[in-house]
Image 1 (cartoon, rainbow, N blue to C red):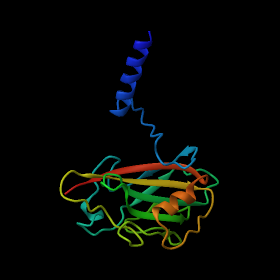
Image 2: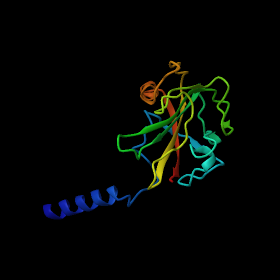
Image 3: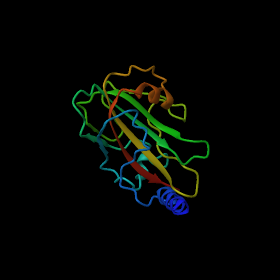
Length: 183
């Protein structure tokens, strides 16, 4: 009986590690205590799809259009973090946005709401810097959106880590959109 439990446990672990049995709920996502889901989408690419060249360093290098839905009542600001988890040294940050007006749920390409703040990305620039992977296998770019219960009021050079720290205990809802890009 004990041996059978060990075999079942190992089979379950292998299945989870391989993605089998995935029900679509990304419980490992950095939700920072968010109890609700919001929807983050783009008219430029579908979740899991290819990010158009226009939104990369090989094109115009402008942010894709984004739309938020299912933003819960009580939301005081929106935040977006875009990271490439496929780099050898850990996540590479492409965009840090916070204190966006929650009534502005449609962001046109290359724009953020007027009073939103943009922090420093891994290129050491404030604002959006699009996908720019090395030659080879396409990388994934995770656009994480947050509904926040307050204005975060971070400094203008806020990093992804600063945003993540500020979101702890203040994220009401979380949603993500993942795009791929390769050269």
